[in-house]
Image (cartoon, rainbow, N blue to C red; front, side, top):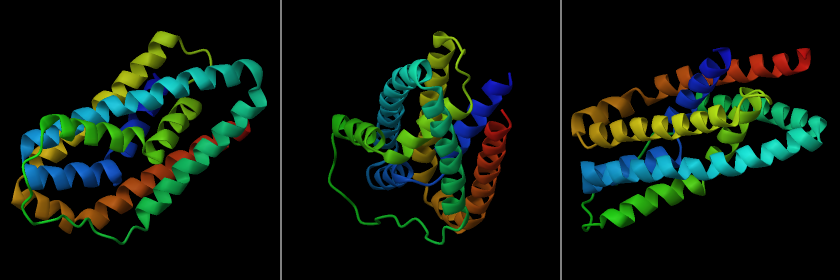
Length: 205
């Protein structure tokens, strides 16, 4: 249960933290409407699975052949959580949305934009690696690990679907941007706390 809670908390916080996916869905939802935004969200969710698959199989080989390297990766993962937490906490920039109207865009293009934005996003790479090395135990069954991966995709889809729906409404978009710095500090503080606690847990083992 502790493992599940850790995966859920890290996934949710990392998903809602500002990044390329957030900016892309927000911009496209405002320019092209709700449905293109939802298709981009679906693309992002499937893009997460690219990271899940290569992380799961790669980490499995490392666990089997080099426990020391695995421990090093765990420490790097903890450092990454602290890093993204700090970057989020001190972020002073505000999201800028292109307000001009754009040409119609195909559904396939919107889906591919979401998929490629996430699949090529190094932030997601490090997030998935960090989660599997920090929160998932080496003896966790393969089916459970795949379940965690599906949860990550579902969390990404649900969050970015909400972004697409609400950011297509002008009033909600303005309200969120007005409070962006407060949200950044809250999310950043929690991510840093998780990274520090996980780093000390690694040292204690």
